[in-house]
Image (cartoon, rainbow, N blue to C red):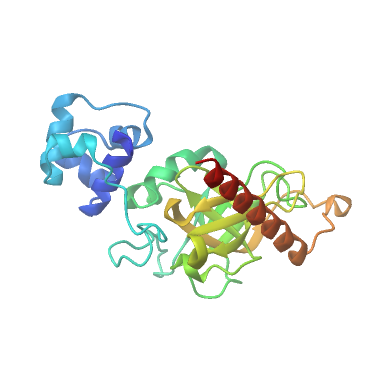
Length: 263
């Protein structure tokens, strides 16, 4: 069951309004919309009724029905023809690379489709990159050594999750895990899931549902003020990582089989 905050966000996007436009129609501040969608605040009953009317649904439907559901193998932002990634351009109409620092990652989860929010992000250009849509994300933690915490990953936008190539590294913007940088193995056609593997073997692989992924960015470059320590580079190949993923799948299959036998 989706929360009120998730329903607000899903329904706003279905009627194709930015957070700013939505706030204007409700006669409230845009920051409040962000707080409601992130679950940091709860709207009063009168405002909920106003939202329901704007969405064209009943109050009961608004509160009791999960409006985030869609094709279980694809997230709502992919192949729907309704929503494209929001970008900014420079004075020559060339796309900027917007930068999402760690401190802005929480806001990005609710504002990635909001033009006004994206315009507030820092931006830069890298002439060495080929034509495309790029975004930069600061990473935290040491799960992807030898890349150190604070490194900035520049990723190219992936229009369709099914285009993810197994073994490559991606920035994924997800509903439940937040913004993560991992090596990804694509099993969408088989079970609708992506397997995420850290280059630092101290971190266990895990899986996410395709429907939980809002955006995917193929890592194309990184920026860091610290040089990687070659001694910390993991001696792990993509084939070895794929083997880890297969072992994880087998364990999951065995657990499901044992669970079914007990029923």
